[in-house]
Image 1 (cartoon, helix red, strand yellow):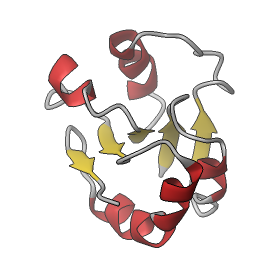
Image 2 (cartoon, one colour):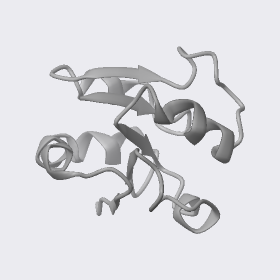
Image 3 (spheres, one colour):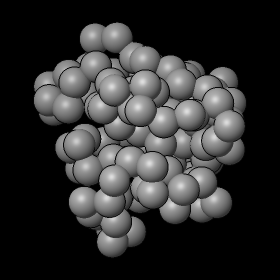
Length: 104
């Protein structure tokens, strides 16, 4: 699975995804790109977008995207680390256009 990690999440998040192909927004050269354009850029290259932006689902029409979105409850490293064990099962079941909000 190809995963894009939003700049709002700590870079540590990439270490949690060792069994997947993961990249950060920064590594792609997309830092500062607005959400609509970012999702369009990511759509053909990634399967899942990880973010802590809880408003994304209300700002963008995600149902029509070929990209799934997983929303973390916080971008704090301590919170992100607690979700490590729950992330792989979610990734294995997520579908394009789906938005899943993780809880702390």
